[in-house]
Length: 483
Image 1 (tube, one colour):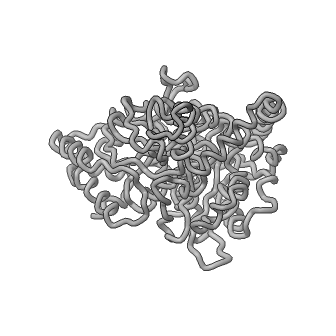
Image 2 (cartoon, rainbow, N blue to C red):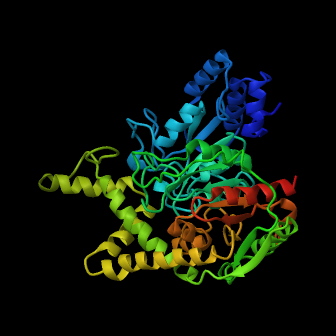
Image 3 (cartoon, rainbow, N blue to C red):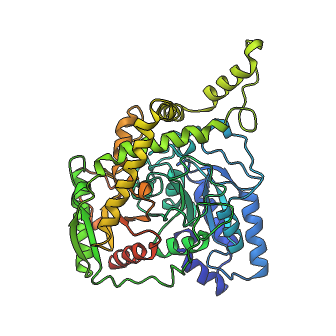
């Protein structure tokens, strides 16, 4: 039995029936990892994972859906006593003295941590090519990127190197790699999941979320990690329902809005036709579609990158070689020893993309530019959110492409950061508005192919704040219609 192929629910049922052991699931996952050349992981926890699996098997008790289930963690989520590098040289040897809240919640569930996954440095990127530890490859076609910044988590799930994984999403970093790798990826409502222990990129945008093979697994993971946390002042005191038990594939009468601004120039023919095919499936399932307008979509990229880089500039100021992380030890000028240490540490410790965003963010926060750029971006952010509020007075769900093109080739866009930034147009608005969204893989039979590749394409479902159940139900209805 190829255990790594199965869902969380299936494996949980097999464990309860004593038909398999947790240690067997763990071994099947590590076998796939050892045979892989995708570079999905930065750190593996082979000894501790095997030890915990054996302890669970000895007890023979698997009370929670995630008990004994292997899970991978994006390497910007802190785990006590284990390396947390953020894909950066500057944190290559950093060992956190505490656990992120999501790690504590998963530990209580009895989940088994397999390793920390590769990522774009400090979650800044859309391809996982910005990692200090080398790029991750797309499991569908190794010549292509897996997306980013949670590319390691997405590729690991898609390549059966783990059952499920956690990532983080600041402007699409869960949904875009999920789309590129042909799996499910959910960005929860801002405040639904605690950010305590998530190394910050842009604090008002970051959100931890799950990646998995199907909707049911996403629902299980979301229930496990969601909830109010006193350690995170931005987490909200909202009831956490059993998203799995509330899954309902009956979406007859649901109103789905199709924003006209998302079907304009720049959308590839492959994606356009594939999304139209997916829309027809939702219609066949009884949903009603209606064209809507998100009028200020054209300003989303500029708004996002002004806010995100400004917050990144502030958050990354702590990496100076003094308190923790990489430090340049030798300096040539003793009279300027401290200043030179700061400069050389950051010069050598940060990659090019990080330096670029720090400079952009610092510029936007300078006296004389703050009102013109950063403050104006915050005002436009409110307008973008209002567009969504108005739309949700008419519809229940908003449907868009996840990304304007399928996965691109390794090295194809790395030297053109502006083009890569502009491609985030369909995902960043969701973070600016703080809304939940899921990327669902379009059935291969519905994917339009202009070329010869077999690359996946994702459809994005956006919901009202804290209405994850609505988008999960739509995703589940679509998924089960293809089985």
